[in-house]
Length: 283
Ligand SMILES: N[C@H](CCC[C@H](N)C(=O)O)C(=O)O
Image (cartoon, rainbow, N blue to C red; front, top):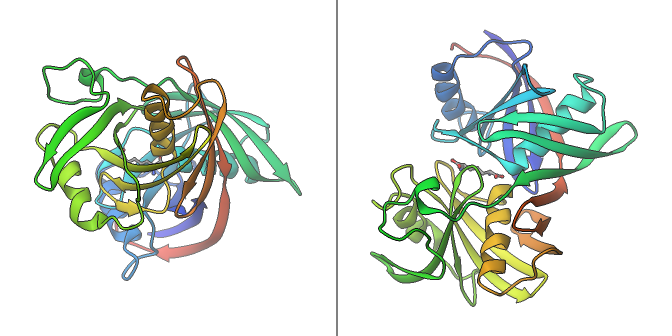
């Protein structure tokens, strides 16, 4: 099957995008395709695969798959790129877009230059700290500054959902972390029946943090949009950052701006097309 794809990245979190308006790809095909195309040696290379489908309730629908083929419910960096694709390729040439995801419809405002999107602001919804909603298997109703035991020692963690599961821990220096060793201990821990995305955060001020992320199904990525929202939400409830103000999040792949309130989180960041291509693939 001849497939046209588009490679896009948001703060270095890169995915292969396929236009589902042109191709019908079943969930099981998408899971296999994600593993094949995400491979950085034998495929196109990326943190996963995103399929941009028609939607009955929004301008388009995002289906996101991690590099291991597992489907994620929401992806912040990818949804900005989906909005870019929908605008740039005239699926919906509007600066206020609605993009459907598995965790609801997200309103997105795009900023354009030369008739192309370069920046997008997403209404990400509210953080949910209730452990059953994340999910976390525990007697506790919330894990905020919770002492969490791993094979690598005890970490003070905060758990929350941004439509996908996140665990946030704060530390003095994130750059000496051996993430490939400790990331899987969190991702595959028995407390997380659906696994989990984990953010390791260094606080610089009440409006500036840095973070690294170990993503469920993709390993360490250069950025994670839902993860940046989770990091700021956890920083606010733990008293490190200000509520109702913008916080700059420095990630390995670039910066995201996050505005936290109890009711709504906004994420602002870049959306970049890297290249397009064709490939022949058997589904
Ligand atoms: N990179 C994405 C998050 C992917 C989450 C995925 N790893 C999962 O929840 O399974 C983001 O920018 O929000």
